[in-house]
Amino acid sequence: MESTSPVTLPMPRYHRWLPYFAVLQTDIRQTLRSWIFRLWLLVTVGAAVGYILYKLGIYREAGLIQKASILTTDLIRGIIYGSMAMIAMLTVSSIASERGTLADSVLCRGISRSQYYLAKWHARLIVILGTFSLISLGVFVSAITFINEELSWRGGLTAILLLTMLLASMVSMGVAISGMCHSSIMGISILLLILYGGSFALQLLPDSVPSPDRLLAMMPTLLRGQMDSNMITTVLTSSLVLSLATGFGGLIGFTRRDL
Image 1 (cartoon, helix red, strand yellow):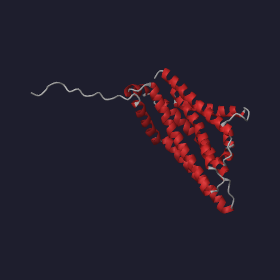
Image 2 (cartoon, one colour):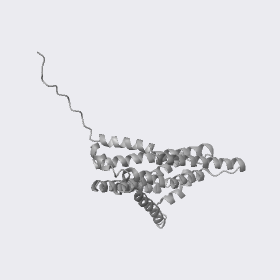
Image 3 (cartoon, one colour):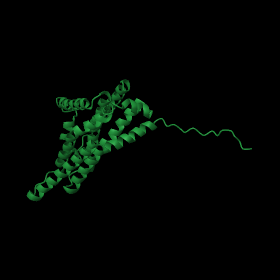
Image 4 (cartoon, helix red, strand yellow):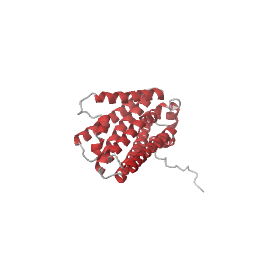
């Protein structure tokens, strides 16, 4: 006779961080498809290409051309200042825009608050920093290829790394504010106020204290390969500490707030 004993199937293995990766992938796709990101990418790339064509047109007509280090610095400075509002919208809207459905999202997906926040934080870091790095690298490669050879590959990559770390602090701060604010508009206003106010306050400190404006002022020298190791170490360390402090500070505040 055939056996009628029940067949016991092995229980599927549960991955603790599976909800984190699910939210991470979903948020990356949503960010790449959002109109804010596409508008930021279109405006940034279009402005950079237009500026380069404008400078090449001046060179052909008058035979005058700007140094590659100055041209690259102007382009990157324009990208940073022109992108601040868009980046603020992308970061602050990561959590604040989902306040109406946040409780259901966390409960239905079986994800903890900490995993949800970390997934949002890391997704915005990946998308924004990756996009900025690619655009800046494209600008640098165009300058070193089509203008002249005064630029240094080592200096250019170091400059992009420093600016990317500064931008990481801004992204971390924006996501932290998003986790503690119920309104995206209020969060964007707070973030921009902190950024502009902090930049102005740093200008009042001695020149030995690094600031975004001082770093941009030293960009032409850095792009030519003339690097100050102490300045680079200070900027990288300060940006990393600020990014981690604001990110995990926002994590603590988010986990203690009511959804």
